[in-house]
Amino acid sequence: MLNIAIFGAPGVGKGTQSAFIEKKYNLIHISTGDILREEISKGTELGMLAKSFMDKGQLIPDDVIINILEKIVDKNLKSEGILYDGFPRTVKQAEALDVMFEKKGIKLDSFLCLTADHDTLVARLLNRAKDSGRSDDADVNVIENRIKVYNESTLPVADYYKKQNKCVEINGIGKIEDIFAKICTEIDKVK
Image 1 (cartoon, rainbow, N blue to C red):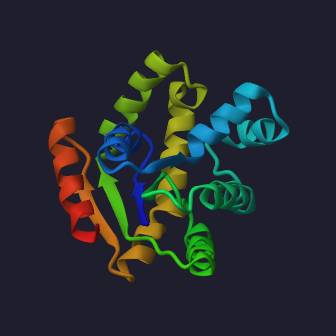
Image 2 (cartoon, helix red, strand yellow):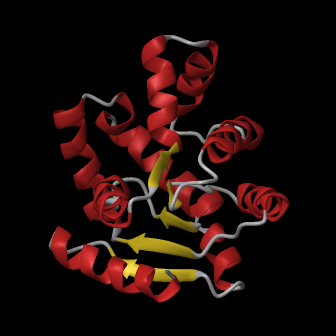
């Protein structure tokens, strides 16, 4: 079972690249953000809790995310693999993921870290807000807070996986096809 995480700041292109990775490698795509947005659209208790954090540009509590993720992983243990889009977002989540994987006899094969400069991220998010209507992408103050939270709470996850020799940095600026080709090269090394 192939387990790949795609990682990077808001607006770096994780969702775009995930769609290509999912199709090419026949992986189950888990986007915690998409799962939470679906819960919000359904008006569930989890959705309303998530919205209260997302509207401020804050991360959802680790225990909530881990619980959701483990249920999905359990349903897909016989698949060819799973692509974790935007997860883990904290070192605590990464440690919990390692523990969960160890219990299930699987491992994270690669941690793909997409990178882009600050101005590119802000511009992409503002453009995405126009297309998607996502409230967390429309307000520059919320965007700046999301990037700040990413830099403070999420970016250390890359260091966590660098120590395990699993983190691969890929420039997220350029033609989508060229970025995808670089990603495929890295996935093929661990496949």
